[in-house]
Length: 199
Image (spheres, rainbow, N blue to C red):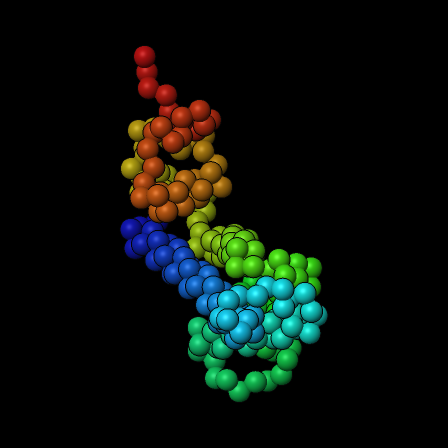
């Protein structure tokens, strides 16, 4: 592999991170917007007690769905001509990782306990699941014969044995290299592929 191929991997990982971070922000904005619209009492305070009623849970879930659908269309460059409910749900799933029914179920189960903190926890799980699905795409072109190139690219030839490291381990180290800004010998100590210095 040459440097341009490694740069393409790095760019794809950066793009994935930006997309997921943006989606996370949309989740937060959607929740805040819907709470302000539906759960404020007459004194301007949040009243989660309103979520005890199934009718309010449905309204809340529908309002979240509308926000996610709009954000998904914007992010994916799709006109807002709805093809139908199924297509809308497919679009929301592509963007958030779940259909709007997922949030309906969360609201039905948690009711008045579906607070901002609860929503943030759900979003963290969703983001993690999307990250696990999308990250391997950046590394899909890497093969066994690229292990040596990976080690050289990371500047780790002095402490990683190319004959003892397997491809999944090399890919994992490359991902750490990109996300943490590099790897060092201390980070691989104890691994079977660690080259121990002669005494």
